[in-house]
Image (cartoon, rainbow, N blue to C red):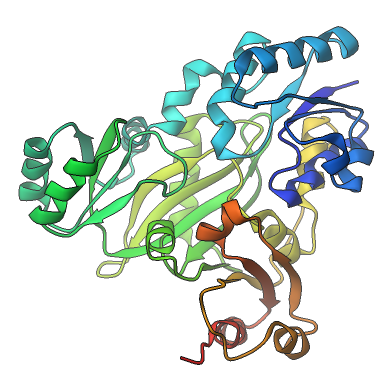
Length: 389
């Protein structure tokens, strides 16, 4: 039997379906988290063969003890994942220490550091957003003199858009260095474009099992820093250029047996693609569920079938355009939640309150809407977001 550790299986809440799917494939599912057993969703409880609670997921000796317990009780661990970007380094360390297949500590810089990602993109023959490490004001000013304002500053190794800022002039650059967090930072040229991501799942040999493209109405940096709506949607038809660029990136990063999220800018002026960064996990929030509702499929189960080595291919079609539309509590909306439910009884396929920790990026309430018509999808999005002020 395959032994798989689902790391932090309770967060985000919809990721309990990874455990559910593994159990359905006959996998021994071992949960490792910091939530009390009684707080776990009943579906998750029923999916786990065993559960080890630690006081602090950042306490590595506690994690070692938990993994030692699992190994003693069930034998060699075959896989470990949370599918959450926050835990990538911790998981890589555990895979290294317990000789588990997957991304190891030696691989982590390549998928976490913006600087290392750019080198891989260049090796793949892809154009990248130009940038460099920034250590002081003088060096950053030289970069802006060459590339102009605005510029983007972000941690070289970071999660999402945390501590990422748009710098519009020298005064703001001075202010940034006066307040700069004590972590390595990276400065990039500003690209006037829309973020499009090549997302999907590769099998244990690195072959595509599933892929799609998501388009962000606003970048995560703008959403987080300005506390505005989150709105993104998937395409039914995949542009050839982003498919080819995504394939090149996957080959360059030698990804196997994982979900992926590869971000590109599509420039407004020339429509060309410029590689931004990679995330070797599913996109956040309810994007996994967007995959499923767009195709009337179960990508949780597809992934689990791959892990269990029972699935070698996956036939699917993109039946619908689908969008994630957020609401935030500080807006006064024209239409109530009940009016939304009433207006779109068939098109609204999922809605949920989100944990506070996710609200800045994903909203306080999220809606998944789908339709065969893109124009109708946009009409529903405007209805949900319409404000009365």
